[in-house]
Image 1 (tube, rainbow, N blue to C red):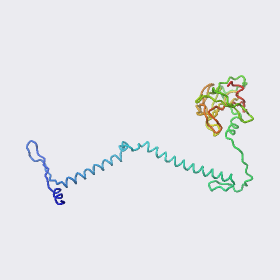
Image 2 (cartoon, rainbow, N blue to C red):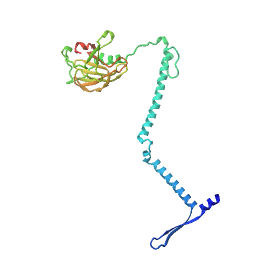
Image 3 (tube, rainbow, N blue to C red):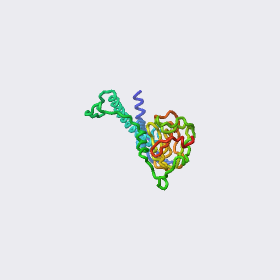
Length: 281
C-alpha cells in the first residue's frame, strides 16, 4: 500500500504550453505529485506569514473584530496607571487613619506616622476644627469687600435695599444665632434655580465638607450673601452677577444637610443678620 502511494507521488508528468495557432511547444516542465504538493505548501505558508506580518505591523489590525483601537488601548493604559496610583493613595490613607486611631486609643502607632517623643500626652490640647467657621472668620470677620461698580462704597441702610428672592420655597428652619444657625433654610422644587439677591461679584465658589457646593457673593453696602448645599454651581470666582440671575441649582450636598433645600445667609459688615427681616420668603 505504501509502495503504491509512493509510486503515485513519484510518477513524472510533463506540463507543456503550446502556441494555440501553430501548436508549437513553447515551454515545458517535468512535475511529480510530490513536487507539486511541496511547492504548493511552501507558497501557502509564505502567503500566510506575509498576511500575518502585514496585519501585525500596520493599522489593518484595528479592523479585526474584537481588537481594541489605539485610543481605547491608550485609555486602558491610563486607567491602569490611575488605578495603581489610587490604590497607593488609599493605602497611605488607611495607614494614616490607623495611626490616628491608635493614638486616640492610647496605643503606639506604626512607623508610618512620625511622633515627637519630647511632647508628653498631657501637654497636647485637642480642639474641634470647623473648616466652614474658619472660612467665615477669614472671609466675613475681616470685613472683606470688593470694589463694585465705580469703586466707591455705598453706605446704604438694609431697609432701603430691595432684595431679589433667592428661590421660591417654604422656610423649613429659621434664623437662630444662639444655635449657630446663621440663615434660613428654604425647601423648593427639585432642580429649582437659585438666584442672586443683589448685584455683586462672586468671591467664593466651591466645595466644603459640611455644606457641599457653596457660593459667596459680595454686594455693595458691606453685604455678603451665602448659598449652601447646592447641587451645581453656575458661577465661578470673579464673575459679576445681576440681581435675579441664576447662580446655582438647589441640592442636597454636604454633611449638614437633611434633604434638598437652600441654606441662605446674609452678612452685613461681618455680622450675620436675619434674612427674613429684609426678604419676604
